[in-house]
Image (cartoon, rainbow, N blue to C red):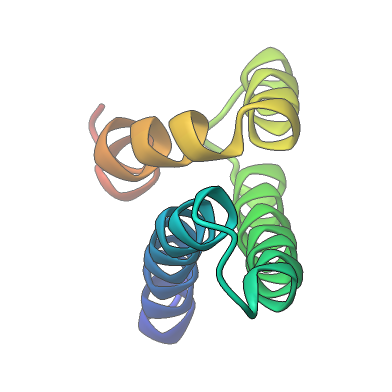
Length: 98
């Protein structure tokens, strides 16, 4: 993957995490704009999940089972799976002699 895609993936995950935390605070305190932040959080999650699944499915280094595992993980556990993937899983995509 190219450098712009790498930056977009990391940035979308960071925005998703920040919006999740801010939305939680707004919703718990019943502050105004909580619903709007929730919508923005959902859209940022969709963007991150889409980019991550695209990267995994286009990889030739992951087996079919690993691709399936990452796809299901991103859909159901996007926050945790995203953190694990960005810290550990992406190294397998970049290192040639893994």
